[in-house]
Amino acid sequence: MSSNLIFHVDINSCYASCEKILDPSLARKPAVVLSNNDGCIIALDAHAKALGFSMGQPWFEVKQRAHEQGVIARSSNYELYGDISDRVMRVLQEYAGDFEQYSIDEAFLSAPVSPAEAQSLARTIKDDLARRVGVPVCVGVARTKTLAKLSNKAAKKIPALSGVCVWDALPTERREALLTTLPVSELWGVGSRSARRLTLQGICSIKDLALAPPTLIRERFNVVLMRTALEVRGIPAIEWEENRIMKDQLIYSRSFSDPITTEEQMCQVLSVYAQRAAQRLVKHQQTARYISAFCSTSYFAQGVQSHPAVRVKLDTATADPVVITRASHRLLTRADFGVARYVRAGIILTDLHPAAYEPLLEPFISPHDKRQIARLLHTVQEQCGEHSVGLGYAGLSHKPSWEMKREMLSPRGTTHWNELATAKIR
Amino acid sequence: MFYYKSMKAILLARLDATAQAPYPYPETSVPAGFPSPAQDYRAVSIDLNDILIKDKAATYILRVSGHSMVDAGISDGDEIIVDRSLRPRPGNIVVAALNGEFTVKRFHIDQAGVGWLYPENPQYSPLQINEESDFTIFGVVTRCLHHV
Image (cartoon, rainbow over all chains, first blue to last red):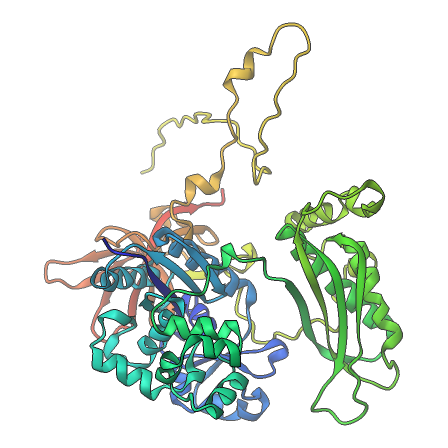
């Protein structure tokens, strides 16, 4: 009988690959994708990497060279990436027993196959995604999530594997070589701080961590790291996300195209962000107990530095946009308007509960919740567009001046009817 | 030159264009009296997504521009539904990426094994796919949403 193996699937250079699906002119060209406001490079394909470009490079520094070398830049098109991601996840679920989407471009799935069968299943998944959705992926397969993720790294780095790495099908020497040469920091869930502390204790390579007694790791570090150590030994210790408690935080934060200096503008920003955050809560059928709001000046700018933040405990867990918006406005009294130039703001909702998690006593139900304001806004926005309706400042129909700059945006060809890709029949 | 056969249109079903997620019909409560005879014949409205899109992950919608496919019923400004899950076969109308652009043509392979892209308009000539062409098939066209 074969036990379950875990597959980790990850889209290669996700954003750049998404851009290429509906734009054949990019097929043979190096491509980079820029962050919000076209600030820096946040994704790039292998071709652009080979030309010496890298993640995090500020665009204004490398723009000239990129143009000279024929590198195509695109603003981040989250509508497109989100839609492509949904398609990939939909295909993956056809193959999955257990399934967990880990981020926009990666997922874990389990299947009851032997290592030999895993090889061909992984290849099938890879080919199916290339054919149907049109994105390249790598697949790592192992008995644990941590090893599956490590195998995926190997699949990406070692060209001979051509995108698929089944840990147990690798020759023993190869596995040993990987474990002894790779530092612990290459492992999923081992941050740079833990890696430094481990190194101080003589645990440098992944092999060292596998050999260390798990109880010792738990005593000297924490239970999370112990689980990682067990997983490296091939013992599943990290649960599937769907079985764990819900992710306990929702962040909506963006930077502005132009700095904000007045209370009125900031009030508008907070209203819009608070309502978008509330909208996401409604969509995921959750409520929040705490709301934090923050804004900050640029670390790179001259002048006054200001990073005010507030945290507000709400009377009850709610997804009510009125309550959340009102709470976010408490930030306004803490900001230095007139002197500080704010470039970024955000809303963080924490202590999340499934909607109707606890039956509320009548007096504690927010009046807006009772009237279903959140759901009504959500429905109207879904049918008539994001900017069709909003509360107070967020309902202004003209586009606010601080909205994100996306000057090199590709068409949102899978989500917006008037931006479909064009096929020529000349 | 042209002759028109008389055309018939058959009403397939009531189509509710606005319904995105059809609501389940409420249980009809009849406190007293005769139940509605229509009750047993209720069905969910037609959803065009279900009919036009067989594989949601693999289907893309593109808008066409140009006139080389008019005889195949594809006109300037029409939207076409493209299914990437289907294996392109000779004779299919496909979207091909050719030299950096999407184009819609009928795909053929001749007896010498050479690939061709055929327009469906006598004013245009077929394109031969040779080794220098930067050519891939994006997907097979399954439907055309023609604007009448």
